[in-house]
Amino acid sequence: MIRHICMFKLKEENKKENLEKVLKRAESLREISQIKVFQVVTNSKEAPDNNYDLSLIFDFASIEDLKEYQGDPRHVEFGKFITEIRDLRACIDYEF
Image 1 (cartoon, rainbow, N blue to C red):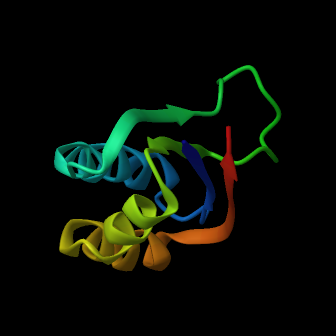
Image 2 (tube, rainbow, N blue to C red; image 1 turned 30 degrees about the vertical axis):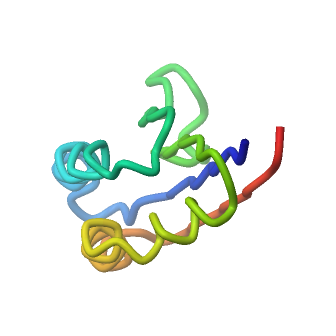
């Protein structure tokens, strides 16, 4: 299994509204068949503001499935959107 964790720090401008938009758009990714486990989480309101705002945590059966997901048009569209509203991105893919 491969766990894909991708974290985003959103731009300060319109952050609250953009976070709501991201959460709604992330739901479209749930339909991608290669995703075995789907989690979208946000930073706790009580956590430090300098933490990342949002994380996608997805499990895949194989690295090939992860690559298929990355090429899926729904993922590509999500990536274009979030690139416009984020300051930082961090990602890790690991086997477990």
